[in-house]
Amino acid sequence: MQFGFLKTSPPCRSRGFSLIELLAVIAIISILMTVAAIGVGGVLGGK
Image 1: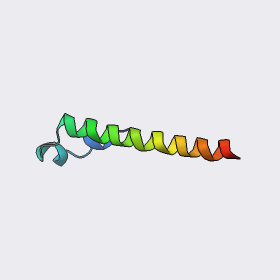
Image 2: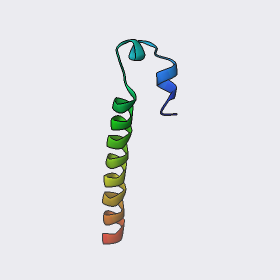
Image 3: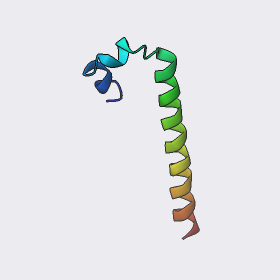
Image 4: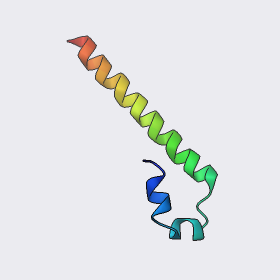
């Protein structure tokens, strides 16, 4: 699902969209999701 937009948008590769940038984006998304999960868990745990 995360790689679907890469296959449907070749201009990303012609612009020099590297694997390092892709990993960085995935890492940022993972961190945000982890923080959100901890936040939701804290709210549910508080109640």
